[in-house]
Length: 147
Image (tube, rainbow, N blue to C red):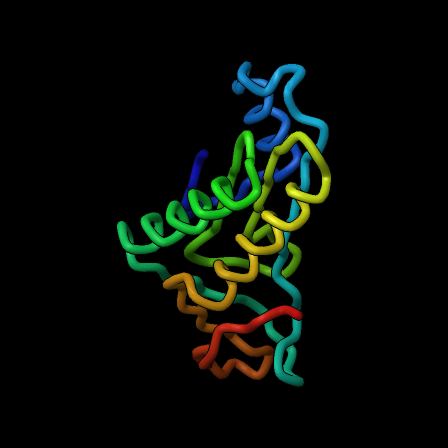
């Protein structure tokens, strides 16, 4: 299991391939990998957004993400889990979050990936400040559930 907080852009697909290659315990063991990739969009709440600044609480954020990954691993018999989350300045189309789960079967991988992402999006200690095209800055007031 790995939880990584990054302050710089990353290539999610290259990162994912490199990560999997460095995990020999997965060789021949997994039948499914579920991946969620979240990117910044250029609109929110009816306004055009030019940029976002994402803050987190170092130490607390990683601990929370590790806890939800551990729970998902136990609940779904995962073989491996990877969560990468950006902080700092983010632009439209930039990858923000990558969640990947490996398991023997697709059902467990899909369900675990979704559970991790939903908890991360609704409960993890991240704060977003958007810069609107109008020049106004605003804090996003609530985390969301993506049902």
